[in-house]
Length: 103
Image 1 (spheres, rainbow, N blue to C red):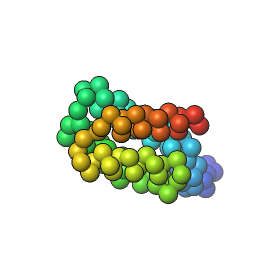
Image 2: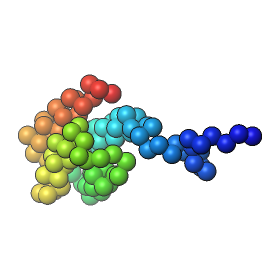
Image 3: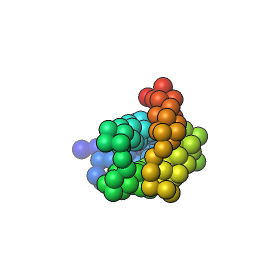
Image 4: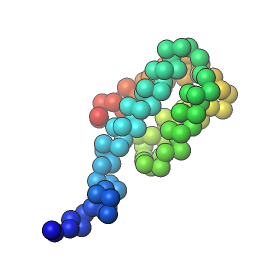
């Protein structure tokens, strides 16, 4: 049986850029789900803080990527004071909407 050199021993692509666009899409949709949950109960609870921190610590994508710089800064502002203002809500929803255009 011929081994495919593009895949590692676990069948995952060796080229990490292989799924870059899909990973960006997944990251934006994941964050959208977290933000929708925050807005649904109109509060930022401990679990949502953990999810936001985990999203920011994700090394799947590069935060120097122009698509994520503003989003990450907005999340850091939210986490800094532990609350999401109506202005931050609107800004975050707009950024996610803008980024959804390339999904």
